[in-house]
Length: 174
Image (cartoon, rainbow, N blue to C red; front, side, top):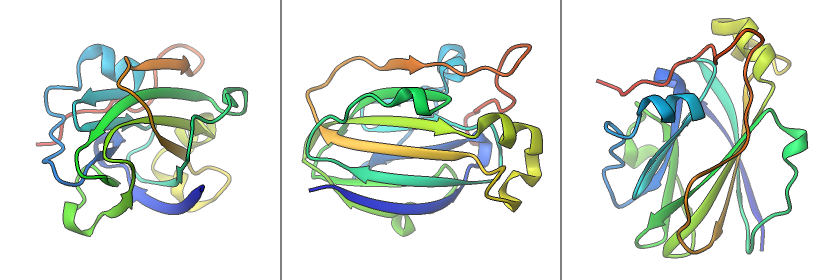
């Protein structure tokens, strides 16, 4: 059965988090230079998804019974990584949100695969701090989750602004 939930999250420090609800979700050492370039920080039980803005973003969480088909052509930037969710409770939250108040989802206990597909990045980056004021300029993130064995993180599709890197630079929170 597929379950879909819509969220609006504050992408403080240019990132949102997906983590095992029963862990501390610490990504402080995971934001390497390569992770910043990929907009994906990976720890055993937490993922940081980089954003181009430091304001609210629109997030759609989709829980799936199996791996979805590849629709990366419809998105600007697509990444995948494995996430260990020990007891089957996963949270999706802004990096400075209070964990116990975060959106929590029941997933298969153990290893799950998370695909983060992002779009509307050029418009969001151009609007910058005003991007969340209009659906036309809001950064949109779809997070798909399904049970799967652990496997390496993958950059399926990479986006870059003309002239180079992302506008936002994910950083570790203090």
